[in-house]
Image (cartoon, rainbow, N blue to C red; front, side):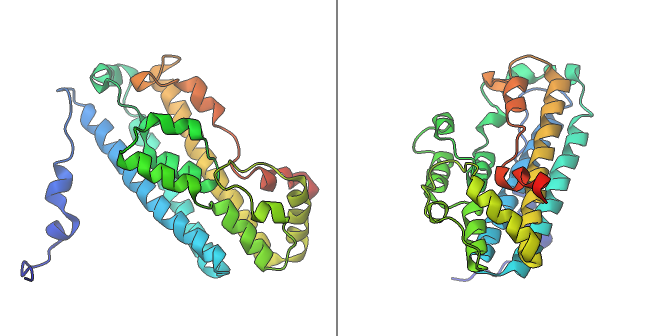
Length: 261
């Protein structure tokens, strides 16, 4: 039986449902902003995951032009995500604290999509899985990501497909483990930059992506410090000290060779 209901802007985007998803726990004016900003973050995380999966597939299939286009889209989205911090920072510490206690154990630390993105980029930390109960959709997604190859693995296979002698142990590494630096790969990457303009463009877009993630992390940690100072994070998370520890490169090998070029 077909649905003869005419397609409209409202039902195509499910606007009525979307606008009903904001359910503040207090009567404080600023809580609506807090909810909407974080819901929008989750939507952007969903899109970034969608794009980075496509990016990895493009590199796997030796389609650098398609990959470069996708890099550009992801980097543009990251700029938008960073810009949202400006909106959130219009909320003063007093305004946030007026409803903070209503959040109970809820914390951005529990965003499984951001953890998925970390896993997809190669930052796999099994200790984080304990924050997501078995049987939940978030845990299922992270369990799947844990056993899947990462963007970094796709990047290495792309280089191998261009004729570069990527060490076999890197091409067949245990993908459940985090990516670690490789001096042998660093020597190869210097050669990539010096001999292959197209492959080096892909390398630079990887660096751009890494920098974009670090920029978002930096703005996020400064926003948290500005709002709650040295207090523990919402829901009892470690807060600023933990966030500061995340301010480090994702693709360390690509940063390590800067002084060699």
